[in-house]
Image 1 (tube, rainbow, N blue to C red):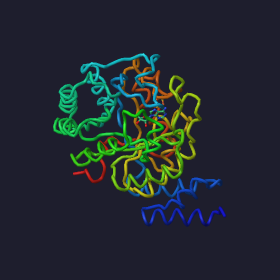
Image 2: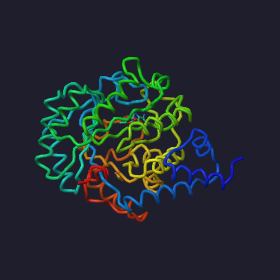
Image 3: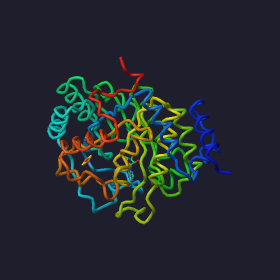
Image 4: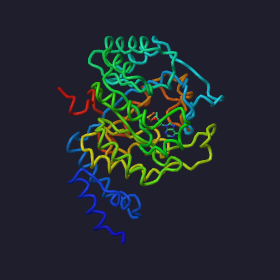
Length: 352
Ligand code: 5AD
Ligand code: FES
């Protein structure tokens, strides 16, 4: 039943229709032979739009305090072993300055849902980053907020917002989160962000406990409806001090296949080869790029806090300086025949 011709035909169909059926998804994900052809086709699509350029985002993990208690996450509020920290505005600005000198033109401010930073503080930080670093883009990734707050950040100059939906299926969502969080609100936040005018990123973890192929199909359907500018996916990696400590890690191959499928369905979407992918496999990020990803998000946080933002075990780059990571990534990307771009890397719909 599973054969190469059918595999190739399905890939051609996904690419031509920019759509996939549940049966096609099952076929591709269950296909046991070498998936290289899929990766090749997806990277061809990426290259047609982005050449062999890889965009960089400087990630600043500015707080690991979080009011939420997601079962998979190492910085959940009930993890009393987490060594908590908050960066000051001055620390954040210093990181951006250093990043700017290293060539970064996008800064991603990511943190747990930490009410210590009120909306005025966030707006103030955004404004000052934009002011001190001409031509840069600011991405926020600080969780679920009200429409009003999202609008304030946008008016202060925030360009983009990352909020993974984690899973589009309500029942699955409830197996990953306590009842204080809801799938509906998550989706509403993403709709609000789109409506306000942000470049929006959604996404999932691959291989979370209880995830089915059907769930992944629903995720793709949700993405088709949302039309995100970015999609962040990475394997689930267990963290020892969470309820999912003993759950198996998500599969790297499944993640790569999904990256390729997403590239075929959403040809111009910004698709990071994530740190989780680089953690699950030493050459995961290179493999991700070769499967159709076109973004890397190295950490710009100061070394003394890096080993504290641990969403999962074994996270890479927790001892490196930002300059070291950039050098390392440059080498890795060039080794596979790609190069780092020095542009802001907006989604094509946002390019002036
Ligand atoms: N493994 C992999 N990814 C994780 N994230 C959170 N915890 C884990 C984990 N244990 C992801 C979530 C979140 C993003 C910031 O990191 O998808 O949205
Ligand atoms: Fe950080 Fe390689 S990317 S050390």
